[in-house]
Image 1: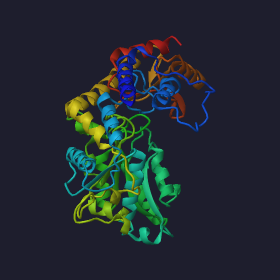
Image 2: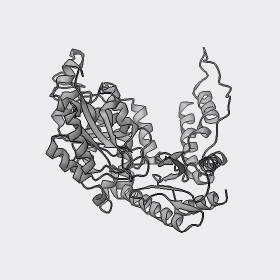
Image 3: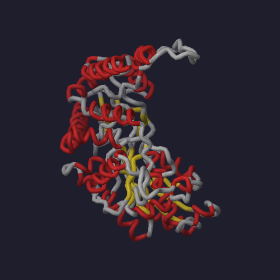
Image 4: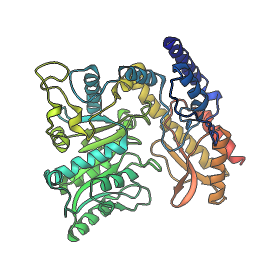
Amino acid sequence: MVERVGHALLSRVIERHRRLRDDACYRAPPEAHDWDDLPATGRGVEAALTAAIERIEPFGTGNAHPRFWGWVLGGGSVAGMLGQWLAASMNANVFAGAQGPVQLELAVLGWFKEWFSFPKESSAIFLDGCSSANVNALAVARHWKTRGRVKREGVGSARLRLYASSAVHGSIVKAAELLGLGSDAVRRLASADDRLDVDRLEAAIDEDIGLGWTPFCVVGNAGTVGIGAIDPLARLQALCARRGLWFHVDGAIGALGYLSPALRPRLAGLERADSIAFDLHKWGQIPYDAGCLLVRDGKLHAATFELDATYLGSLPGGVVPHGSHAFHRYAPGLSRADRALKVWTTLQAYGVDGLVGVFEGNVAQAQYLAERVAEHPRFVALHEPELNVVCFRYREGDDALHEQALVELQTSGFAVLSPFRHEGRACFRVALSNHRTRTEDLDALLDRLSSF
């Protein structure tokens, strides 16, 4: 029974991926589902999956669809999906030890350390996403700046200050709050083009020192969440090295572009960061969730989270032998899903060149769309795309018109763009992070919006 149901489900999912282009991008779920009460007696695997197929599967966000361009949600891949299924069947807790999933994660993380030119003694870990990676990175930076004092004594009267552009992701502010620094510790410097101004930054550092703050970290963006702008990473790193500050890069949007020789010059300086957080479930086409953190000083990373717990001891041999790698030393959590297998199957299936082709293809599509917008009589471009995000508006029309158009796109099932305001005004934001998108999809989008 289970084998038959499993084969049927796999066939259904593969077929759904084949016909994605012909399906609606999004379907709104019924306002009131007739959810069954929790059964006292099990209904069986087939009945449970049948109900899930009817009630849940048709009503996702639709981000696998070629015309899903909202937020920055990756489209995933069949190879990654199958890898995730295999990992789920193993149900491994990848916390430590002599087990295949631990060895595989170390190997895959080794690839990323090499690709980003990090030293072998650096550390790396898969997490649920870039938001968590940002929190962990700033915890390491805090530990470094206070020489471990905060870990022992708490934040106390420490007035640590970190710096970022006004376009920085909200997870940086959340991180400051969670780490006991407070949101006031984040000084977001305004910039007209979403890029951190190095001269303004240095002036802010000097000003804060005079006010009794202790500057400790600068966060650079390898692609802002709004328009995909890249901070001057090399100049920021040089300033941090000179002023004794930690340099962290939030690379959720564009750090993977560093794998492309053509895009790498735009991200110069990324390889010299003290830490890099990036997502694989966006541009990397990995099924959710999969984020990654690299820390240049691996010993410092371990010291930040290491805990002396007798229940986590090792043996001369067995599952957790002496000297085996322990991922729980590099993050707050102990229980960890196997995220490496779906990354490995994707890279094995498509190769580095395949992923680089996606990155370069999406960037080319962004440039194409920007050029179409610039020549279109009804639209006006709001910025020059640096990576894979394009924002534009109607030449005439208020915010309400733009929001109505967004709702129509979504509810009709044609495409999904998410709400965004550029310099305070509603606009159309197209985030290209899907390998299934074609140029004709972008033409169809402009045709649809121009007729609204």
